[in-house]
Amino acid sequence: MKNRILLLILSSLLITKSNLLAQRSKAFDSLTQLAKTLPDDSIKLGVYDQIFGYVNTTPVLVKPHINDAIKLSQKLKSKGAEMTFFTGSGKLYYELGDYDNALKYYLEGAKVAESAKDYAYMCEVYTLISDVYIITKNFQKSDEYLAREWAIIQRHFPEDDWLLASYYSKKSRIFNIKNDLDSALHYAWKVANITKKTAHRSTDEAKLHVNDLRLVGITYTAMAHYKEAEQIFAQCKAILDTVKVQSGNAKTLCRLYGNIGDLMQQKGNYREALAAFDQSLRYAREIEHPEAEMNAYLNLSKVYNKQQNYKEEALFLKKYYELKDSLYTTDKQVKMTELEADYQLEKKNATLALQRAETARQKNLRNISVGIAFAMVLVLGALIVLYRRIRSKNKLLAEQNEQILEQKEALEKLNTVKDKMFSVISHDLRNPIQTLKTYFALTKQKQLGPEKQARYQVQMEQSVIQTGTMMDNLLIWAQMQLSNKPPQIFPIDTADAIKNALAEVAAQAQLKDIFFEEDITEINALANKSILEIAIRNLLTNAIKFSKGNSSIKVFNSIENEKVIIRIQDFGVGMDALQIAQLQDKSMESQAGTQGEKGSGMGLILVIQLLQQINAHLDIQSSPGKGSIFAIILPKV
Image 1 (cartoon, one colour):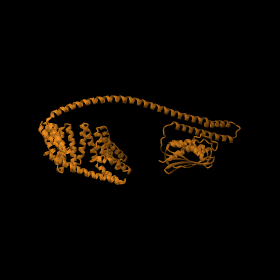
Image 2: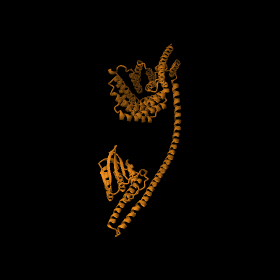
Image 3: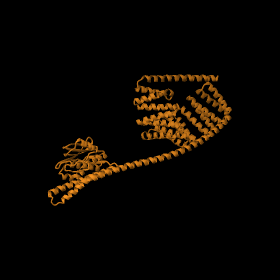
Image 4: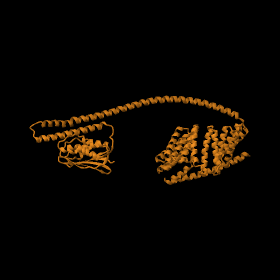
């Protein structure tokens, strides 16, 4: 008769459950059909969001729609939806126990959150990733993602108590699993102290604080600190006994009395343990919580076992299995569990013997596994050492080859500089020096009149100036070729640089009766003062060289389009388009000046190279017979 009633109850529950599942499946099918008919827009995205709401209840139904939802969110460029679907997919696989795929989708969600700089979502997804690593016992990776979460909380949400409590709770959980109870207790207290701040606000927040205090008490129990555990549980009872939270606290009391029962059982105080588990059972029945009721039955049976009261132990074991089977099995399984309960009582000694034999077998298997693992570690270690040695030698050879290539390039560069210097010295400097010798010889002749002597003296002075300019340019060019250090760039006054360059070429201009028209103001630019002065001096020297006697050269600076421009304008021979192109390609040969002045052909090319080093450039405007305008364009401060 009893079994028939139980079967009727079970059948009723199954029918009710089937009806609920049918209704839920019907609603889900309606959503999926609607998604098929809608265009790819925000409304369809909302339908997929509702579909993902079934992840926790029917993950298998949601699974076929994962990729479509993610692709639509990416197509519509909705970062929020993309993060939601990646996280929902991870939760789906987590519910199914497929932790590899759960981790895969969580990590994709983390990438989207990081690209969107959504720090709150980053905290959430790091928590989910950490949970996967916790359940797979990969504590190193779990700690890594918890550290990332902690860095975000400290920087962006330092006052967010909820995030802090969530983080501390996970740390306590990890240390409990690792059996590092001191650390677990430290973080459990942190959580409880945070929720204590708001416990007075409402019933729910008071219960939240009680649940966090319970975790502190549970940890004290595990550490065998029974006095501290009793004090914590007493605090929990005092909070739940207050007027403010009298109603609706049966679930919390059910858990609390279960914790007190565990404490008393561990202390060996079986009478108080039975009383606590009885209270837990009463509250479990009150809230109609079958799992809690089953747990109370099982705990009561354990206490009676320790008291060697096997009759009561069998009674509560029977109740435990009956309730368990009424929820999860068929009538046939109920009968089997009844037989199993009887068997538990009658064959206890035989079961213990089998357990000892199984323990010994597992110990032997573990020892064999440890030996095999140790051997594999040794082999792997030897391979790693060998691999590292080979890699170290290869790395050394690569470094030596690289060093040889660098030395080869440096030698080739030095050889190029040497050839250029010898070329200039042997050709461009030899002629001016030979001219100087001739001029000196002519001036010693007494039959020369004063007019010719004066003319030769002027020509000597010009030759000396030209030779000095060529030497300076040659040395600067050589230094540029050999130096690997970029010049330092600071804000400088361009007026100072222009005036210094004008002073250096004043004597050269005076020999040709050339005067400067200046319109110079104090304008700051980003440059290297020494390099800029050399560039301006070379442009002035070039303008003097190709200007006719008794002419002018204009020098002025200005600000145009957020750039600082220094212009040098002459009215000399000028250049055609081909000459300008050759100059830009650094292939232009030296030309004689208006009074036969010679050069090395390096002046303007050197200017272009110098300006490139200080983030500036040279602009040239010129026409044959009308002169040239050289403009240095610099960044403004």
